[in-house]
Amino acid sequence: MSGIVGYIGKRNAQPILLDSLEHLDYRGYDSAGIAISNGTTIEKRRSVGRVKDLRTCILREPIPSGTIGIGHTRWATHGTPSVQNSHPLTGCDDRFLVVHNGIIENYTALKRSLKKQGHVFKTDTDTEVIPHLLEQYDTGDFETTVQAILPLLRGSFALAMMSREHPNMIIAVSQDNPLIIGFGKGEAYLASDIPALLPYTREFYPIKNNEMAILTLGKVQLKTYDGISVEPKRVTVDWNVQDVLFPDQDHHMLKEILEQTKAVEETLKGRLTPVGVKLPEIEAPWSKERVQNISKIHIVASGTSYHAGIIGKKVLEQLLQIPVQVSFSSEFRDDHPPLDDRDLIIVLSQSGETADTLSALREAKRFGCPVIAITNTVGSTISRKADNTLYTKAGPELAVASTKAYTSQLTVMMLLALWLEQQIRDTHDEYSQALLESLTRLPMDIDSTLIMTKDAIDQLAQITYDQEHLFLIGRGLDYVLALEGALKLQEVAYIHADAYAAGEMKHGTMALITPGVPVIALATQTHLMDKVISNIKEVKARDAFVIGITKIGEDLLTEEVDQVLYIPETHPFLMPILAAIPLQLLAYYSGTVRGHDVDRPRNLAKSLTVE
Ligand code: M6R
Image (cartoon, rainbow, N blue to C red; front, side):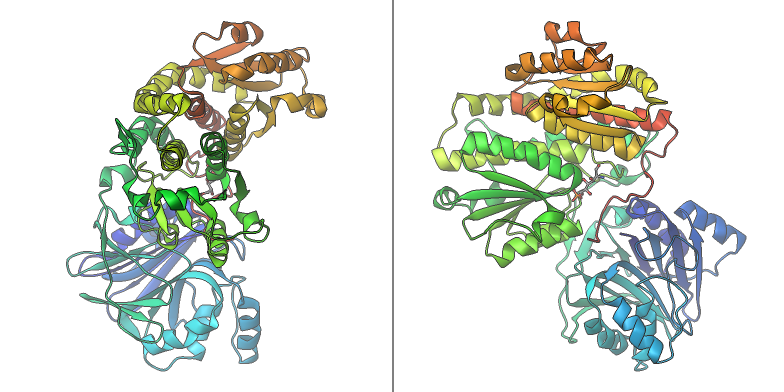
């Protein structure tokens, strides 16, 4: 995954490209580069590291100003992070400049054949075959040259290309990999996602498969690979530019944790009514008969979204009494149970661009399964490929670690479960009626949780300063939450954090409990409290340092642990939403106390558009 930007218009391209790249550096920060045309010549600069390093490189060696350009921020897939492997990449004679996101799966065969034809390769990247192919198939006309090479490429790719012989033009394509055109007055932008362009425009067009965008001064043409013109149907988004500017808080991650009250409030807005849940996005296509005909539900997602999916499974199974299977997207594509059109697939993805999830979605469609997507990103590839989409309204999430998107996904899962229940039974039983009522209070409860835990966790995080190992234990929904807490701590604090079903510790893992090792015991489910307390006693007997996270008033647990953090009480299904907050804060403060760049953790990227 990498980030791509482009600009063509009347303004100086350099600051626009660099600023937009900075918004995209969550997609990769191994190296960065830009190429700028002044209408006659094109110059490029590249640097290892982040966009700020590229800025320094340009300060040392300024780039002549121009109003047309492309840029790239890289997450290395093929070839180490080096200047040589940085984009824009060129071929033998520098005629074509290419920035690429994705993977060219058949690059080895293409490279072999190009080498036979005399092409000399300078990098270890898959991308480099593209400028060489452009040279090989150059017709003298940039557009037809691009048309000639596109059918040769296999894999997923978003490309922005320039030609020194046509310095007033950018050609962009997006094959199973996002690339968005932004429209200004007499100018156009390119970026891998919408938030990067919010400072400039709110009108966008996500380029689709088999389309190429030809950007010239004052004109954006869209054509199929066969040259047939297409009218770009623009989408307008209502996101606020403030959401993507650098936060008042020290980091995007903290800002996004603190924004959860608003994110959940927005996600609930208009969807909770006195008579139940309203989800207009799926009401028309999902009649009662169709819902009642569902035989099984499959939830497919990756990472944090996968954890939201497991909680979703437990809620859906209890409310609907329909079997639900949750799969990692990366596994589902190659290994899934028999599927047919009575299997409902729910895909969860904050970005709406995760390649593994997209592949799983395609696989499900191959069997005729209906797909509902839950995503945070309007116009994303997953939202376009799914039959119906329910949006989380968390606003742009820029920190690599997912926080507000997770709690918003859980909120939508609750709404969807309640809505499906309405379709199946026409009414809610007492338990789901209580869930509905608790949902109305959820934003307030999130606010209280933030107030109750933020400073205490800041203190507590200090003890993780020199810890290498940490355990999280819980039962039922608390175990799922433990999985998410562990992922957050691994991701931003680089602590070897592991989650265990509390009752399983005695079956092996207990051997790892040594005096002083931190164990976070999650205990938010009343019906499991006695059993969790027994499990806490077991680790305490081995001198672990136990931190309990529980509901206000759980005094029995308080007596058993070394330190306790209280959160408000709500419906059992919503406890994972509240209890996720102290865990997110713990990961954040542990990451900062250990001196890590929490917004840009090592080796990771936000949007994983490669499988
Ligand atoms: O955009 P998605 O929800 O599809 O992303 C899935 C995962 O890559 C993502 O949740 C990842 O695990 C987060 N960085 C975790 O904080």
